[in-house]
Length: 107
Length: 121
Image (cartoon, rainbow over all chains, first blue to last red; front, side, top):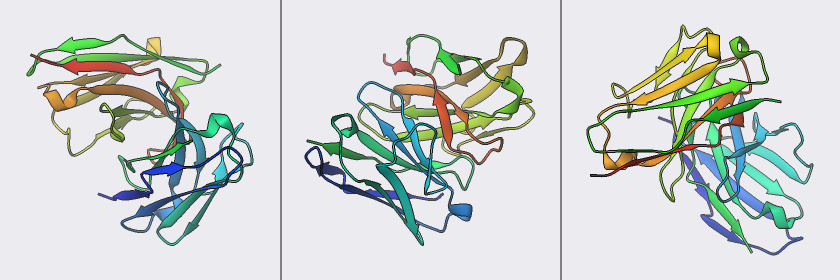
């Protein structure tokens, strides 16, 4: 099973600041099959990024994804109030896929 | 618009079974895989399995293999998740979700609202 390790567990920032979230895979992901989701409290996750760097429909361009080997990064260039949430990475290179434990971005 | 509407909360005793439904609408049902994901209280997300659009292919997580069954009714565009031999650690919010790509290897673009299953004696 591919293990995803997210860091940090919690990121404390202010609106307008830049957020950098990390997700490390225990092995290489074929075709960069890594997605990022945002989850607001009490809501289902929302797809932000897939194939490591492709923004999903309707996602603002302040969200971007990148990869370097087995290290994946989600960057939010300028935090808006609605961006404070939990972020999950998800590898879908195997079936079923696996998720990281999440990073909480808080004020 | 695409919608996945799940059945309501359930409470079961240990050892019992539960069957959750996921009614889909707003898209061509036979073109997309449906996956199930759960989230225990305060925990991360866990993939449980998926079913192909024609229902001919189903796969499950190794952790729940033998206790989980995914089925579908194409006539009502509804997908079902049944979990048997329930344990306290199965207490979680269960989500159905649609695969973005017509493949078993896919991220998930639309999600149901979640069904809370509580296992308690």
